[in-house]
Length: 278
Image (cartoon, rainbow, N blue to C red):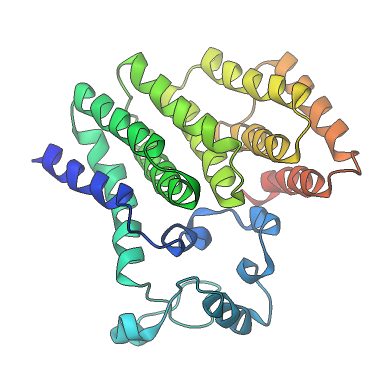
């Protein structure tokens, strides 16, 4: 049954023996190219990409290698890939689990959805440090996949408690130390707004980020919520409230002039470029 499959997927996403690279391997397919500027050079497109990939491996971060799947040499390389990149088995399993979770989640009952989300929340709370970050990343990507699937099929989440549970998972990730996790959470927030499809709800999400940007003094929180506003604008076709739109532009304009935080400036400038690329 779908319920049994979903339980297996949850185990794949939250298993504690995952290596740190299991989440990092998702970066190219899940991140918008402008957001890559926020990461280290090894994940950016350069003419020395192959060398950078090898440095990536030397630093004990698992990456692609033909030894994991020799037949990959016959496959057509994805756009931008210089070499075939079959992932290690652990990473491949988690990558497939996030995609399949997105499809199966929409097929189970609302009660089962809520139970699964509560289980995912508990899994995050039961771990600490880097392992917690890995599990959190896997969960956010799986949820983002589920929201994208629901939005594309005009589906809905059901219980209000389901929305609240997902929102709680996303907001905690927006202020993570991991740039990848912040970007993933920002997209998930916008995908949530797409599924709910209610202007009042979307405005409420924007207001959360407005309030955080006004009060937060640390770069991490500012980057996370700047990305959130950019994603809301990008994936929901704009911010319907003229008041919120004016406030959004004003806040981001002010932050873009803050020379004490170059990371925030890069994030905001790249966010502006997104509208030209989509």
